[in-house]
Structures are given as structure tokens and as C-alpha cells.
Length: 115
Length: 114
Image (cartoon, each protein chain N blue to C red):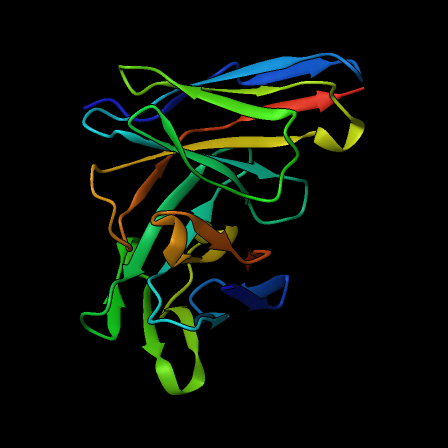
């Protein structure tokens, strides 16, 4: 059973550019969530995808968008990058139930630096 | 809205000493609670979770946590700290309306002294 994998592991972008981060969910999981973890803070929920549809969104502007593909892998896209977007971006996949308390499995994260 | 407060951004213990990391939650509905550990430059690993079964939950690496509804707490403990326990620990609660969405605390960095 493969775990959650994210790519790339590190990325440096210039303010105003666009970035795409990728996540492959754990085998058998059809729910993917994305989190932003700024330095010294806890992860903040960006949005969640369930069976290719957005299933909840946190307090992030529309320039943060996502996709989920038929194989349940996912992308996070950020347009018009700002310096404050510099953070560790974490992807988590979970088992195919919509109930509460389901364990989320996290990837290693993508460290994005905006200069 | 649900929230989590972790008391103490940094905790330092000696090797072999008791580890106690504090977590208090706010929730208008029965919560599902989690503790995750994060090692430097890595993702989050689940230590344990409370899902309304036993109030004392045992996790990996000798950690356990007790759900106390009257105190709205879910503190993490380990009887004897090991050097390898040095990491950052996050308490999290699920938010009902979004299913598996996790609301995290700010984290506690655990330092273990030899």
C-alpha cells in the first residue's frame, strides 16, 4: 500500500507567479484535503475534494483553487502569488467514508517559498 | 465553530521524565479529537484519536490521551520521554459540517534533554 506522495518537495517562486502542487492519495482513498502550514503555526484547512468535487473550503481567497482527478490524485493551484503564501503545503487523504473521526494520512508536504 | 488551544508553545523535559502536552477544545457538538506529531521537514503522523469510544486512548510510541468532557480537554501523556520524542505535536478536532476537515491547534514543540 503506497502512502500519500506530494511533488515537488521544494519550490521557489516569484511574487505574482502561479504555482501547481500535486498530490497522489493513498490507495483506496477518495477524499483529499489540502492544508497550509505557515512557519510556527498549525496547519490551516484550504479545501477538500471528495469524488472529484469540492467538499468544503476554508478561509482562503479564490486564487487558491484545486482539482481532483478520476484516480483521486489532486492539484492545488495558487495564482498571483504573494509573499505570505510562503508555507508548507500539506495534502491528506482519507478513507472513503464521510463520517467524522476518519483518520487522515498526510504527505510530506511541499515547501513553497515566494520571493 | 470548533477550535483547539494548546497550552505551551514549548515544553522541555528530561529523558525518562513524564511528558504532558495540554490540549483544550471548543465544540458545540461531541468532538472527534486527534494528536499528530511532526518531525522537522516532514508531514504529520497520527499518534492517536478519540472517536467517542473509550475515554482513555492509547496510541503509538507509548503515548496516550484522556478525553475529559467536563474539562473540554484531551491532554497527551507519555510516562517516560525518549530522545526520539523530540518533535512538534498538534492537537486537532474535526469540524462537523465539513466531515473530515481538521481544525488544528498552534502546536507544542517538545524538547527532550539528556
